[in-house]
Image (cartoon, rainbow, N blue to C red):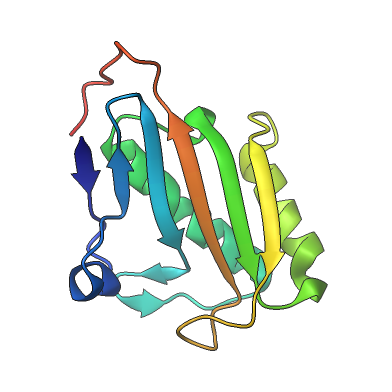
Length: 133
């Protein structure tokens, strides 16, 4: 099993990894927001979504994978009015990949300026190393 971190402020404080690759090739990426370098890169729901998926894809890159390896996404949003903007960002990033996806409206996040959090799952066929980590 391989684990990678992004250096995000909550990883050390709360004791989790940004991504974990299992021996069967499944890679689980923890919830990602628009926090970059310990600071919230606030913006529109669309911008926050692009940034959050960028954080997730950066974690995959540490394991030698990318957006094309994503098989499932989850998008958590705080307002139903943001569905179109978040969905548009998702399509721009994963439109050719077409992973299984869910979008859920939640009551809020740890910081009220965050309006979206995303999770991704990727898959590396067993027997391929990717040469990373």
